[in-house]
Length: 293
Image (tube, rainbow, N blue to C red; front, side):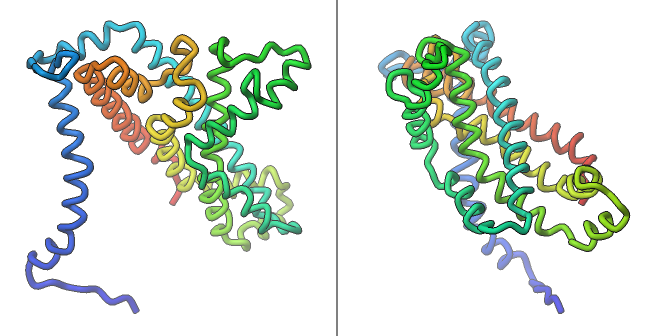
């Protein structure tokens, strides 16, 4: 029997929530408020003088062709990484959910890449696809494919998409596998008795029952490609060549650190934050309606 705790006043519940509230305020709301305030300021290159410029940083930002290019790069990068990482992880999870010999080893090997840091993942892919060092790059060149992500922007974008997808597959795989194992076997067995073929069973029974997991992973993957892929891009291409792989989050870093444009960088951070919040809200508003809990 479930036991519920009741408090006579608000003091004890507030004290219990206080550590979490303090962490949220200090590490989330305080930095976010500082970024918003910084986006209205203009500092000199040495940080000795500061001027309040209202929305000038935002006007400069939206008039910058480089920012539009970074936005397009982010749309391409995020779309392909989300689609590929979710699709491949679902395929692997379906295969791992079967009764096959060595399944535990197969599952363990698929989980390992999640423990690799993004920067290390980038280095691993450089070792494979660098035009002068990579073994696979040499194989492509021997086949007559002029593979060179250092000079070709499309090749560089493809390389960071592959690296970011590979890094995220393990995370998605874990949740998809857990979702598959939570589906009652009796439902599948009933469909088999009714004569439903494997593909029909998957699309009419398994996939709808996985919709809560898929929706959760869709939100998490969007946050991942917008914020957590910085290490991969910085290691593999550094945003190049000629800004071909410079996404919004990487442009925040390059303009703030490399360009010493702290006000403009803060304005980009605020715009990026608003975009992610808006997309998450849209997902909850429209896509969640099709989720069956």
